[in-house]
Structures are given as structure tokens and as C-alpha cells.
Length: 192
Image (cartoon, one colour):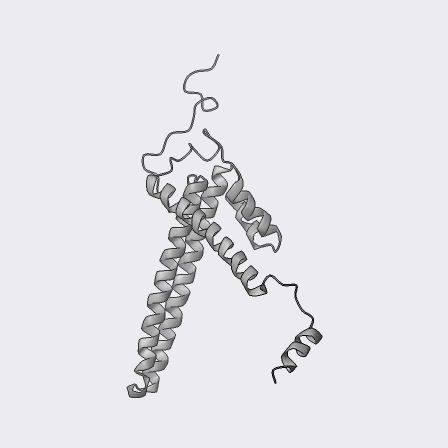
């Protein structure tokens, strides 16, 4: 007979506060999509602000000392490097937490570096269902309301952009069969 304190039969302790930007814990599908979208939005805003500040400096270049300009360009490069490193770290955190929800080790994120394999890994991350209960990485995390709204907004925008791309492709092809270069030359020589 086992005691109630047995570590083999008792669930892991529930965390007091789930820190979404730590590698410990789990992200469900909607949380993963929402945090990925939020991360991309923050990265876009940071790069836009840095690009604007570099452009403002470039506008004022005729009145600046060349040594000062080289220093500012170096600082801009360091800023870009810091933004990219922060983005990569937080993207890794979100991906590892999603793998934890799938009861997989975070080391599976290294598969995203392999060409062609990364497509199937992303499909697994997005469409794979996580464990409903407690797994090796803790209890299931409750998806917050804003995460659900943002995730569904991103899903709808992605589907609309795919439909718009297909519609644009259909419009540009004109509904006709593609012409060979010789046919195109015959039609265009009438007008020239």
C-alpha cells in the first residue's frame, strides 16, 4: 500500500503563477498562436521604430561629422542585433512551451533548423493536440480570453490572406490559359 505522499502517484504541484515568458510550463494551440502573433507584432514595432530612427539620422547626414555618423550606424547595427536576439529567445520560449504541451522535450525545437523537416514540425506544433491533463511538464495551462481572441483573429487573417492571394492569382491569369511566348509576340506585334 502506498502512502499519500508517494511521488509516483501524486500530481506535480501547481505553479503559483505561470510566467508565460519562461521555458517552464505549457502552451496550448491558441496560446501558442496568440503569443507568436504578439511576439511578431512587438518585433515589427521595434524594427519599425529602429528603422525610422536610422532614417531620421540619414536625413541629417549632410550636417553631421562623418565619424559621428559611423558611430551612429554602429549603434543601429547593435540595436538590430539585440532585437533579433531577443526575438529568437522569445520565439524559442514559445515553441518550447508548445512542445511541453505535446509532452515532448524542448530539444525538439532543434528540428526546426532542418530544411523540409521544419514544415512537418510546424504542422505538428499547430495541429497536434496537447495533453488534456497533467503531463511530465506540469498541468495544462488555461488559455486566457485575450489569447483566444488574438489567436482566432490571426487564424481568420491568415485564411483571408490565403484567399486573397488565390483570388489575385486568378485575376492576374485572366481566366485564360497561359500563352506561349510565340503567341504573345504575335498579339503584341499588331500594336507596334
